[in-house]
Image (cartoon, rainbow, N blue to C red; front, side, top):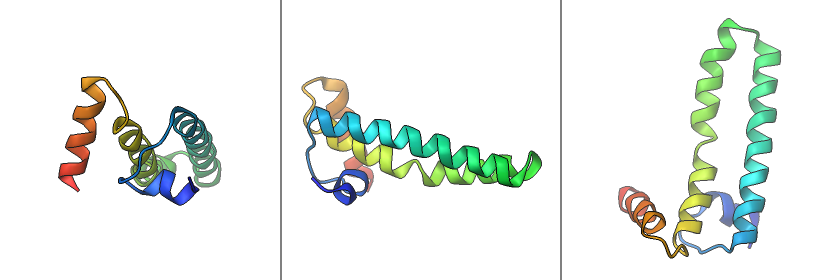
Length: 88
């Protein structure tokens, strides 16, 4: 599976290894990007920009979790997957 499919596609299924690698990478990217925004912009402006950046960075984890939810056997994973697929 390539990175573009993992982080931006809602059609494929992923295994547990891909899910955890993608989740850990996204946590690292979020921490680094939001720390850089805070360091560069200061206090007042960084709050607003951090919210915008956090909303933009919400899409890849959503794709990872929806793709993992398509293979989940629990009812919760399937419900989340169905709700995200029907809204898009």
